[in-house]
Length: 167
Image (cartoon, rainbow, N blue to C red; front, top):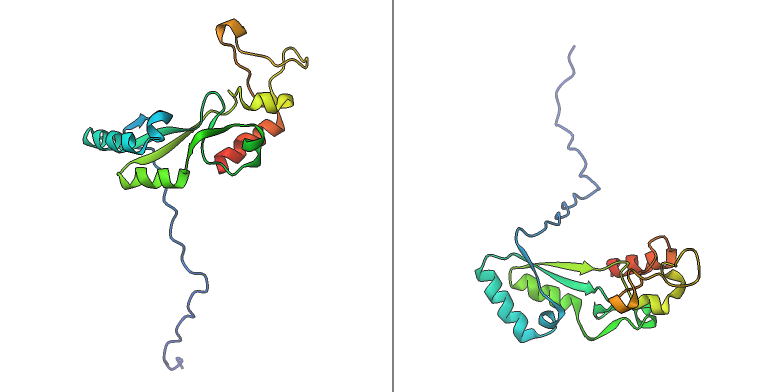
C-alpha cells in the first residue's frame, strides 16, 4: 500500500544569511584630473565640481601621492612621517571623497608608485642603484632634472607603496 500523505515537514531555515553582492567598482565614463591646489581649496573645489557636473563629468582624478613623493592626504602611516613625505596642506581623505560623491562624482585616487625623490632620500637602501653600486640611480642628469626612483624589486619599497594603497 501507498504511504498515507501527512503534513509536509517544513525545511529548517537557512543558518547562513544571504550576503548582499559587493558593488563592483566602475571607472567613471568621463573623468577629469584636478591638481592639488584645487583639491585643497574648498571654495575652488566647489566651483570646479559645479562647472564639471554641468559638462557631464562623472569622475575626479586626484593625487594621493604625487610625482615628487609627497603624500597629499592626511596619512597615519609611520613611514610617511619618517620619509617626511606628508604634505603641509594635507586634506582629510574621507571628507574629500565624501564631498566628491556628494557632488555626484566618482573619486579616483592617483598614486605615483616608484617615481619618488622624497622617499629615496630617507629609504636610501630602497632606491634604484647605479650599476649595482651604493649610488642612487637617477633617470637623467641632475642638470636636466634627473630624479631617483624607489626600486620595484625592493621589499621595503613595495611595502611602502602597498601600505599607501591600502590606506
